[in-house]
Length: 225
Ligand code: ADP
Image (tube, rainbow, N blue to C red):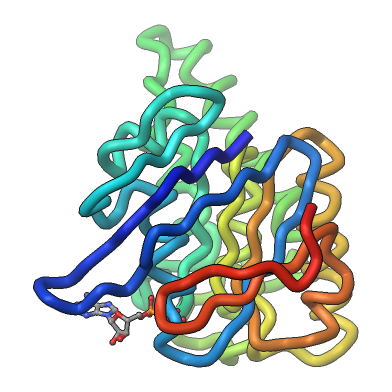
């Protein structure tokens, strides 16, 4: 459960998120839309602990989020706008980084080999899910914009988070792949995650369980969860 209470985010004098309150229970998908500059990314970053709250609170299952390591430790996964992929690494290497960072690998050779094998299986499944199992060994910079976006989604899925924050994650996709990614985000909710999708796309918003609108940092409701 994501609980945001009277959250304000500011960059110096610029208020990007203005006194926002919302809740997203496990199992639900919330879409947040609004014009560019409305504060959608800042809201997601604050939930991910990547920018500090000026005032108000973000809690995940009752635990307050104060920074990015803490949020990651509570299973908050951010699929950032612009993908956040390392361009000179392969797709597979990009997927492996957060998994290796979060798991302390066991010391014994065999245990370590088994742990690495299970990470490989998780990565392979995520690549298959986004339809890019053939592209795992390509450098990110060799992939098209839409393929990079799907790899960023795969990296998010591979982390099996409690909270998935998808920032414009379908903006560069054709309709088949957009449906595929939305189905995958829905499946994350069905497995028990709380999902927020920031989007400009009315069809994405229509498929969510609830739809919030942001404008100049303020949040209002088109459809409540
Ligand atoms: P959206 O995702 O809806 O486009 P953003 O959260 O990216 O909105 O931006 C909200 C406002 O905050 C905009 O005015 C933007 O210029 C500003 N902003 C975003 N990030 C920063 C930053 N790192 N430093 C200063 N201002 C920022």
